[in-house]
Image (cartoon, rainbow, N blue to C red; front, side, top):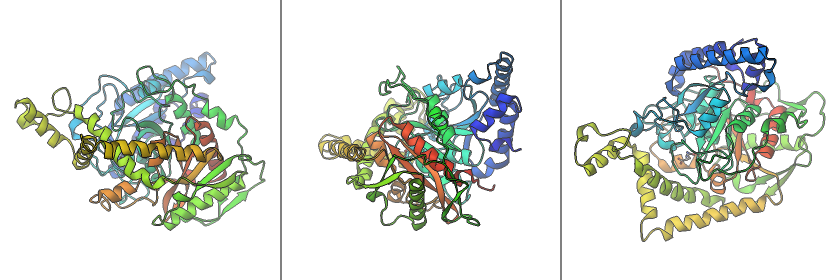
Length: 523
Ligand code: GLN
């Protein structure tokens, strides 16, 4: 058995019974990294020795729990190896945010999400590649190297959490964390056939997450299936007194809401011989119950636009039919301000970034331009920022500074804030009549490395379907829903703020009825 292929819940079942050890599991995944990461390039840093030491400690804990007959109450991720985006601070392990300006930054503290994962027993394998400061949709903006899509090594894995998504898709980690400001978890998940959750704004602490655009940033899991996503989200969610925008709402048991809710739908499978193309779904076995009976699913007209890839549209429309076959009622909804999400996001996110990135000055920590290390202060700052930041980051700092400057503030920043409210109101209105909204995650499948890198606007368009949810603060998940031209397509399921439970239930029902998520790239 290839242990690295396991989901979290499969691995946990084996660990619980003592059929495998965490050291075996961790070693298997580390071997997998050695075997494929030279080609995939998902990791910026691998901490093999640290991981094995952690696994050994986890095994000791397992032994103890088993001796005490307390298997069921072990920490939920005890002995499970994971990958963490380099945007997230890890105590003692270098965290660069994909930037040269943090190339020597070893955080003296853990992000709250890391504290929670540690307490849950998870094992850190390493840190994953990303677009610099999470600005991008392909990982090509990393200052180190470009991660490759495990489904086709000449294509991007999406971004900015491309390293995390590629690591999970290539079985180089059982799960990963990414960050999503305007799609950076969902879009790479969609492009790599993995599950990626963007939680409601405020659901997960941003403490210790290197800031890009603070009113939009959220941490989310990237996993091999929906059940694992529910488990990781449950682990990292919750109020954090150290983070002012984290919300004091109780965290529901997302896992119990799936497996305990009698959500055991009939199985549908893709038609025979249908490998790599979108086909009809056939129902396998008896159609027992309708798990989505009574669930109202909104389908927004604005999410099926001209210019989107035909195979993507076909896959998403087929997925909507699957939801109907599971008992859901589909209703066409309108989100009339959808077109404004992109310009709104690209004013607000750079404005916030320009403020957040002011801290990198070569004085307190991080990179300092070596030839100017002892120059006068302004020179140190200017040269450090000039060398330390890449082109896209500089572009955003300039855009954001301009949008915030006296004389332009009202015309750009303030106007964008008002449009943000209109976008949120679109969703509020739609959710008066539906429980979830579904649409594509991305307008196309994974594009070729180099294809959009010189055309920032084209790159921005890769996130055209994932920006509005971020602006509205609502949760959304991308799940595998088929293939176009042999490459994965993501279905996006959105819900009301703090209704991750409903969102995950619909995603899970769909996943249980289909086989797309079980497909893996051949490496
Ligand atoms: N592609 C978008 C951007 O470049 C979103 C990135 C993200 O979510 N971090 O800003």
